[in-house]
Image (tube, rainbow, N blue to C red; front, side, top):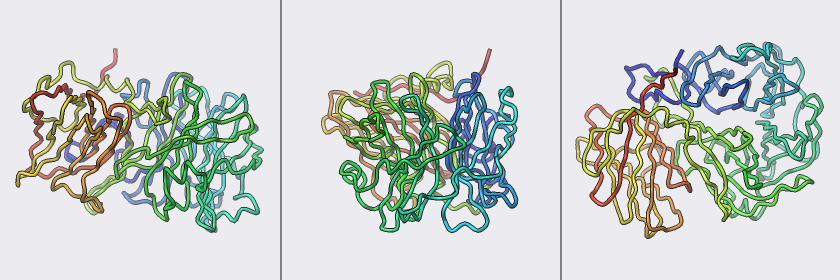
Length: 458
């Protein structure tokens, strides 16, 4: 089954990973196995609300064409995950794909346990069936730290050994990432706090609003630098951040730079897949509208390649495989006006100030992207497509240059802006029946745009 959206809902993304119906949130366990990419995600199969959390599952041979699979993880009555199979990762454990996830039982006090589930048949390329282990490998946070939030294990390799991070928040309001030695997945040993919110680089990048770090991810770049990604939780999901730095042999992380991972208001809980030559990242984009009438909620972003610039800032670009979704010929190649499809891949460049319009309302208001290369700013102005808590335009600052390039990926209500390879903005925009999807690009700018079409194989 493909991931094409029901044609009756123009807001539903058709080319990004989401279940056919009902709720989804965090991406979990991006994993490559025998030539296929697998993506799991938090999923309520019964309603478009955040409850009854299972692991949904989709896979792809090429990051463009995705197929649904049966639910991978289901809460076990009377088990450690009875109240939900929450976020985690998937690793190759001696030739057996193994999910490492947060289990919540019926009597939990807000703290998760770390559970394992193994692929029932590692020779099945679809990894259809999973068998949960009956006992958690970690029953709760380490003693003596006064931890009040404990969840979201992420397993990584360093210096030939397997380690894990667990997201945490402490009673005094300090967020942290806890470190475990888990070279043997059945035997986890607490190894200390990798980093917490009092670190100078973390405090400078994130401030002091967050009281917990969810979904910590740690990956190595081609140049040997390491990136720590955290989802900033302040009692509710808030935003996402990153820190770049060094990870020494003693597992000490020395951060040198950091910032927001995404500058939009509809992006959270990213998950990373470490590949030999790159790292891929997906995030969850939640709904910014009331869900009273929709039978679905949530979508994953396009896959992003993440790396580090020499100055320590994050480098982020759409995965090159996404070009497989482009139509054979572009629908626009020159400034001027053009009708916009419901899903497209657009690149605009400018050497001077330029304002690009993507949508026009009946009142004449416009959804615009303003480029200012001299100032190094890109501004997304939603016009009169407001959303809760979002009145002011979003301004992204990057180093000034002679030319500024923005790539815009739109799929239904999901808008993803890539400002050069320096910053991203993820927002949800819900078109109204009388809105006009029209591209307007001023003279002097450059533009190329492709409609997105279902990929073909052969």
